[in-house]
Amino acid sequence: MDALIVIVEDEEDILELIEYNLAKEGYDTIGFLSTKTVLQVLEEEPVDLMIMDRNLPGTEGSEFVAAMRDAGIQVPVIYLSAKDSDGDIETGFLRGGDDYMTKPFNMKELLLRIKALLRRTKHKKSVGSLSYRDIRLNLASREVFVEEKQVGLTKLEFELLHTLIDNQNVVLDRDYLLEQVWGGDEVYQDRTVNVAINRLKEKIDPDKSKQYIKTVRGVGYTLC
Image (cartoon, rainbow, N blue to C red; front, top):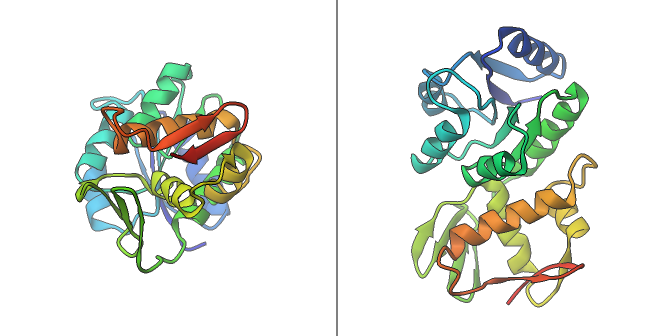
């Protein structure tokens, strides 16, 4: 498989276990025990995905990802962390994560999530643009503008907004969104969609004045 994956994990035995299993699946990996030199690699190498622990020496994992996003680096991130409360998970997503797994973890599930995320993010870029109200998506550059001001979205958030705009005036249920955006893998749950929708709302409508996305209770989501 033509993919380079960076793994940041401070427990060396876990790091080696992940590297071994990813290598068996055909992935190239670069492992780190802290975030100290990760940024340099992200800037110099064509990294396709990153697996990020949160309890790390020095910079905490989600804080590093948030800083990475602020610097314009959009490499997809799967958190793999012992921080497992609802608040911890939400923080991980709000700080730029694309997926979140808690420890102890199942290696097969991690491999499925990696495969699903790579499948979503390695699609060939589309061309043209797509608009809704004062939102504009540049499909070639995968940039998003609200009132002509650029808004930084992760690849997953971009796909989610793209899917909603493609289906405006239609209520999309969570199963449809899981299939279209997350690839339909069984490891994802309704809460995954809820958290991602809330994260998207915060970015495109931070003061909640425009209400672009409407929740239809018991069904799903639609654009207003």
